[in-house]
Amino acid sequence: MSNPISLSEGSIAALQHMREQREINTVVLRHAGAQGVLVPEIEGNLTHDELVQSLPTDEPRLIVHELAFASPEGTRKHAQLLIFWMPPDASEQEKAYTEGCTALKHFLPDPHVHLTARRTSQLEHRRLVALAG
Image (spheres, rainbow, N blue to C red):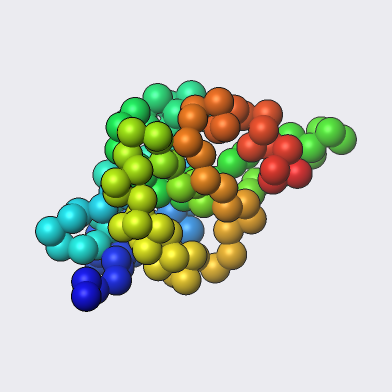
């Protein structure tokens, strides 16, 4: 039986940096198969377009992203998203990333929105704003 996937020290540090420093809005994690942990791949201040463009077409990723948007009334809002990126060509890795997503959910205080996306169209900005609402 394999050990469950966990967060690396680097992942924990990146997520804490995002929460405490507020100078970054995105942490993208990948599964380091041999170590059985999630490691940070990207830690930065990404626009929506940069986030979508950074996702591989054939590999899954776990993303924590602070979405900034305006309400219909014009007030600025923020919502933390937990995105499970699982493109169709990566289905053989789904089990490991599902375990990683579970570990990530336990670590995060309370992501406002959790979604699984298999196509970039599911990450369309208006759709994310509607979910974060």
